[in-house]
Amino acid sequence: MKKIMKHIGNALLWVLTLVFMLVLVGNLWMMFQSTVQHSKAPSILGYSPLIVNTGSMAGDKADDFNAGDLVIIHKTKKTLNLKKGTIITFVDPHSESKALVTHRINRVITHGKDHVYETRGDANNTSDKGVINPSQIVGVYQTHLKGFGSKLMFLQSPKGMLLFIVLPLIILFGSDYIVQAFKSKASKVSKTEEEPIVSV
Image (cartoon, rainbow, N blue to C red; front, side, top):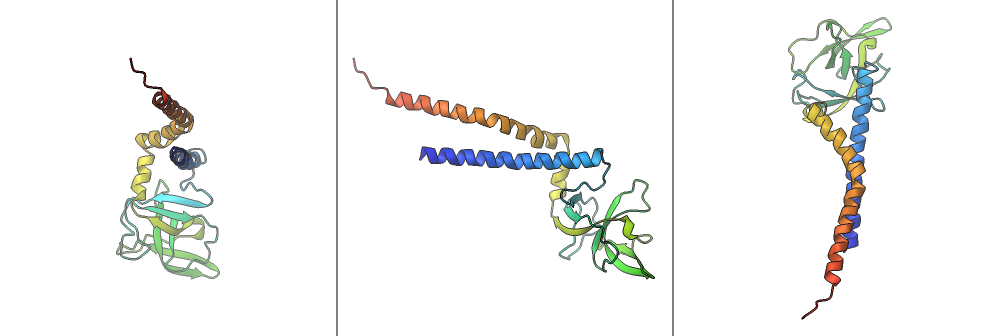
């Protein structure tokens, strides 16, 4: 029974360590893309997680999302023939900081063989200013995770970085020490139980 519990404990420890390390690698990769490559939408295998900052897409549709949610978009170059109703992330042409906006295509406007898109947030009463060219589109909406944007913001804070960078390293390098400490303690208990009782 003790051996079974030991194996289960070791397995859980390594699974936890693996999860922490995957989160660590993912965070470091996105930080690298953001700071070194100056990417506004760091991605892993073409998928980018974006934190929702406003409620412009709040609503009762299945693909509506709100502030604090995490939107997953897929970076694609196939932006020439998108349909009305598709949710896209694009660079706001009217923002000095080139902010990213994730809104729904409200209308497809055709100029010969070229297409441009009129967009609008589901919670907004009016369409966005101007039209979006295919070259301004960063990616297409895939899904969203409710409330995970707020959690990701925490991970990017000093406390979050400490929790998901330092802690995994401590677990990784300290796991052997912890296992050995438990083994030593178990060995001492076993020896104590085996000592004969001497009566005087």
